Amino acid sequence: MVQDRIHSQSFRKLVRQKIRTAISNNKNNKSSWSVRDKILKLETLSKAINDGDLNCVEKLIAEGNVNPDIIQVKRMVKDYEKDNIPPRQDPKVLRSCNVVDRYIKIKQSQGLIAPHISKKIKRHLLTPVALDWDANNKIQRIRAQLEKGVPNTYLTYTKAGPNTIWFIRSPLNRHKSQSKKLSHLISTTKKRCQEDLDTIDTCHSIGRWAIAEGLWEEYISTGRLLQMNDTTDLFKKVKIGADKLKQQNHIQAESVNGIPFTLFHWVEPLSTIISDISKRQDAETKYFDEYKNKKLIEEGQLEFYKEKTAAMHERRKARFDNMMKNEIPHALTFDEGRDLTTILERNKF
Image (spheres, rainbow, N blue to C red):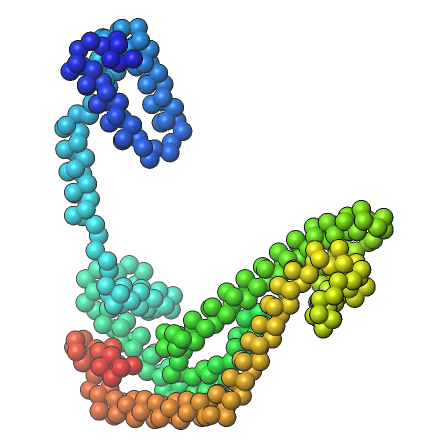
C-alpha cells in the first residue's frame, strides 16, 4: 500500500523506517493502554496513506521523533544518579551508632543525661563512654558463660517426613559453623519427603477416578454395580493381591484378593507407586537410625566433639583470664587502641 500511494522513494523509505523503528522499540511493551495507543496511531497512518493525505502522513511520522536535547538530558540525569549512589555504611560504624543511641536512651530514662545533647558532646564524649559501657556488659556475659563450665555437647534431631535425622550439636558446629554436608542432607531429605507426600496425594486423587473407571468397566462386563470409595484401604488390598499374583506367576483370574480384575487392573499401577515410596522411606528411616547408633555413638563421634569442646573451653578461659589480668586493668576509655572494645576485639571476644 505504501508503494502504491506514495510515489517518492525517499519518503516511502522514511515511512517504512519509522514503522520498523516503532515496532522494534515497543517489542517488549506490555502496557495494554500503550499498545492500544500505538495501534490507533498505526490505523490513522494507514488511513492517511490510503487516502493519499501526505501532509497527515508527514505529521504522524514527525510525532515519533525525539528531541536530541531530551536524550542528552536523560543521559546526564542517569550519569548523575549513578555517580551519587549513597555508599554502603560500614557495619562496624552502624553497630557503634546503635550502641550509642541505646546507651543514651537508657541513661535519659534514668534521668542521668539531659534530653537534648549537642552532636559534638555525643561524638567526642558519649560515644567512647557508650562503647566502653557495651564492652563491659559483654565482659560480664563472657564471664558468666565461662563460670557455667564446659558447654553441652549432645545429640539432637530434626524431622523430615517419617525420617528422624540425628546429628551432634556443640559450640563447634552451630550456625555458620554447621557442616554444609549436613545442611544439604537435611534440606534435600525434607524436599524429597515433601515430593513423596505430593505424589501420594496425587495417586489418591487419580485413584478416585481410576476406581470409577474400573467399576464402570465391571458394570458393563458383568452387570454388577459395586461400591468402593476408600482409596487407602483399596490400595492396601491391591498391594496384597499383587504380591499373591506374582507368586501365582501372573495367572489372570476373575478377582484378586476379593477385588474384580477389571478394577484391579486400573488401580494396581497407583498402588505400586505408593508401595515403592513406602519401601524407600522405610529404608531411609532404617539408615538414619543406624547412623545415629553406629556412627554417632558407637564409633565415637559424640565423644570426639565433647573432647574438642572441652579443649576449646579451656583455651577460651585461659585467653579471658590473661586479658583480665594483663590488659583490662590498663584500659583507657578515651584512648583509641586501649579502650575495652579494642581489647576485646584483639583477644577475639
